[in-house]
Image (cartoon, rainbow, N blue to C red; front, side, top):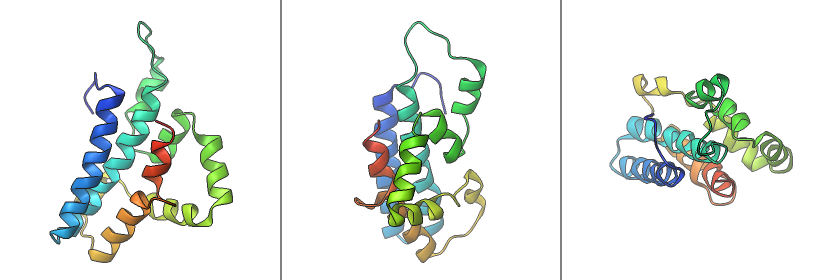
Length: 141
């Protein structure tokens, strides 16, 4: 991720990556759809994190290094969303099921083959309006 991205840029990129994953899935490019869908989550969480960066301050080294991770779990914590996230997991079993699917994604999925079902499950887990992670993230960015 390049430095200097504004929160609005990260929000737009998150939505664009998700939309692109849908386009790829419709084009039967399932592995690519799977891979790109995960970046929608990462960028969305980084948009949440950007709220904690203030002008004329230099974040500490841990913050900067952690912000560059691909680990959704670490990004949730760094965004200050851990309490809300854990509560949503406890109170919404469908959200928890979506998280279980999403949490399997890694950037290394670019080297893996994913079938139609795997891509569909991930895209649904991310984008479902009631139980998806991206709509939940949007309430916090």
